[in-house]
Length: 431
Image 1 (cartoon, helix red, strand yellow):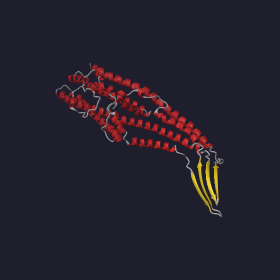
Image 2 (cartoon, rainbow, N blue to C red):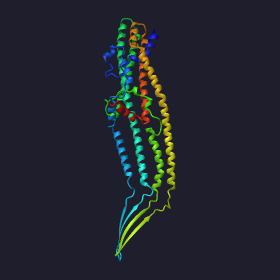
Image 3 (cartoon, rainbow, N blue to C red):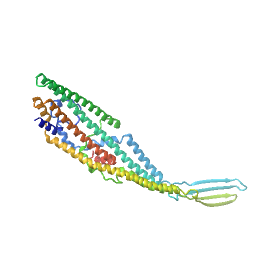
Image 4 (cartoon, rainbow, N blue to C red):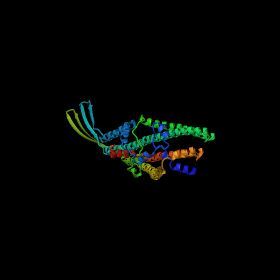
């Protein structure tokens, strides 16, 4: 009978444990009810999404200094594109005077021609640099959102564990009081009472550890946002592989690297433009004594001492370097994508199995275990072992939730898709 009770307790582990954080973990209502009802939230988990909290949270994120700095960089990049689209050379005005038997006055206007298309190359480079900045910005913002959401998830998970450990401690106190009564009645030995006291001390230590972990999670959120009361709800039911795109140049995490290859290809054109022999034409008017003269001039640099051949060759090798960097980045992301597509379904399958055991095991297992112990059908050691198995099963479920969140957020942030996905959710749900 003992084995049957313990096996039933394992199947019903989480039915008896709350899946949400209570403001006070030692409330009398939990002490009076052996069945700590988790069923309402279990039914809501798959329905919980982003509605109601995501838009306010994103509004707060957009006010962070990091985001504001990135927006300023984007505006700067756009100004640089406009600046690059200006003419390279301004006209030059020259005036000269010669004091001689017949004074000579000269007025000359000259203009260097952009024969090597420095302006066109500079504009294309500025546009590419702006696109690279935008891609890097999207990636950085996605990674920032990943860090922030994981901090909020961790805060919620630690709050659950803190509430759970608090309820475990309160239950252990009640059971110890009952054990003392049974000792006085002769129904319990002193050794069993000491086991109950050790169990209470263990629960107190676990609560202390949970408190420290919860404070650390709060500190992490506080350091990022400057406040703790943030709009947030768990969204484990919204995690899916379908949210992820294919690994390719259009992926935000690869867009910057791909554009770096295009930039390297432009580098050789830039060297050719910068070292081009741009001619200058001039128009001059001269008055010497009573005689007026009009002149036209043309000057062309002669690249004899330096033809810039080595600089052009070096620019050409940069293309190969950029291509290899892109391929290395693509391979790394491809491996990460494979790991994500492998791990997330398996974690979700284990999570579903865990939940099915909870929903099919039935309620009141912990009460039944306690009643059997009070009646003397099971020993104190078996009773405490069953309690530890119940707690272990609950903690395993919380760890599964954390692993699911981390797997999904890590990939979505690393690939740069997270912010765009969240924006789509806000637009679709109209929150």
